[in-house]
Amino acid sequence: MNKSHAGEIFRVIQEEIGDCTDFIIFYKKDKLITEEIFQYSHAEHDGMTAFIDVLKKKSLYSPEAMPKLPMSQKPPLLYILWRFFLKSLKVKITSDQFKNFNKKLSVNTLGIPTSRHTLSLSYDETKILDEYCKKNKVPLMSFLLHHLDQAIKQIVVNPSSRTWMVPVTLRSKADQDTKDGDDPLMTGFMDIELPAADPKALGRRIKGELLKASHWVGFYAFGMSRFTGTTLLRLLVRLQGKWQFRTGNFSYIGRWGSEILKNDEIFGGYPPVTRNQPVSAIALHWNGRLILNLMMHPFLSQDPKDAEIMVRDWKDRLLRMV
Image (cartoon, rainbow, N blue to C red; front, top):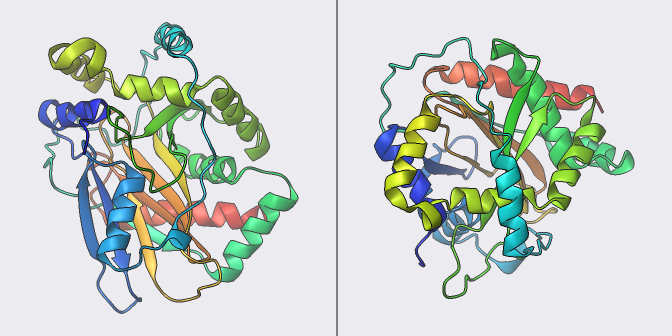
């Protein structure tokens, strides 16, 4: 695999801050079998490559199982750098504050946070939700994020404003081969301010950021080491670690598997949580069912039941609207 400049920041966060920045994926054949957990260094894999590797290990990989991804054309580098400069002028100095923050809490850099939970919607619930979004022309990403944010705001000290990091894949297809010189972590991100009036309003906000190529700007921000070197990157990570810039990160990672294959398999994953974005959530369709995954940084909670409460509230809010 080619060297990843974007991966350097995850290595440095583990070394300097002490957080686990691994991408956690699990698979369950059915409800009675214990889940199999797969742990991937985010310094070497993004969510797409990690999921594909698990599919191959479980003999579930096939071209039909891959999600269809929208094309994301790369804008000129000068435009990206200009947008990065403008974004840097608006860096958020004040932080999102959480009720249980404990800066002295030690974290095992390889240990998976214990406060995590996955919830799989039924086929009927998934169909109802999908049809609602399609009928009302609501982007699924914004629908999911809006109601996740509503569930999470109850653990924020000042719930009037929150910032979410939204990762966006830059691949043309899930199993895309990177060319020589390409960064294998083909994921960018956007900072999205919340709350929004409703999911449609949030969808317009996200679309606006995509049109401004904010996800490509985020890709270069992740790859800061190519411009600054690791020494300066370490200083930047230490400074960032003193503030919580974002509430958390969320992504919808697409439709995997066969929409008509109905079974009890559960396939899910958790992006890393760090002190400056202590909530991570990911949603995906697997064989026709929507699966919600959420993990919280140890300073928020170390009890799986707390994560379960959040995910069930998230699900209830989604279904309440349809």
